Length: 134
Ligand code: THU
Image (cartoon, rainbow, N blue to C red; front, side):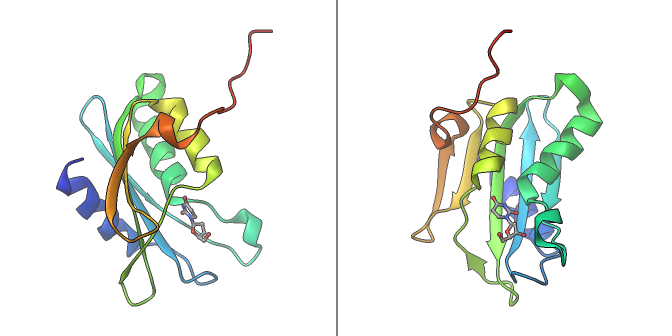
């Protein structure tokens, strides 16, 4: 995981719209083709309408690269309202979205103990949903 992805995730977390949780999340991913895409969480007064940072970054990458998009690495950073780092691990729905585009992608985040760690996307979601041939 290159340091620039972590910095980009930290920067975009400062743009998060999170007035309801106070939990500002930024994600920065690198595509296999070498481009960087970012996303942040966007909350809503109707809570279920809100969206996660990781899937926002993936949507931007797909919009730019189309079907060819594959993910090499993604950094996820969470900040409180004072800009201080908080632990974050991608939510279940985001894990399913991550493996769709890069089973081997490197995923970096501040783990439950607050220490930066990187794992492979596939490790985050054993028994992920796979659509069988019909
Ligand atoms: N959130 C993310 O953006 N990514 C995750 O993987 C976990 C949760 C956001 C959603 C919501 O705006 C806030 O964090 C609190 O759940």
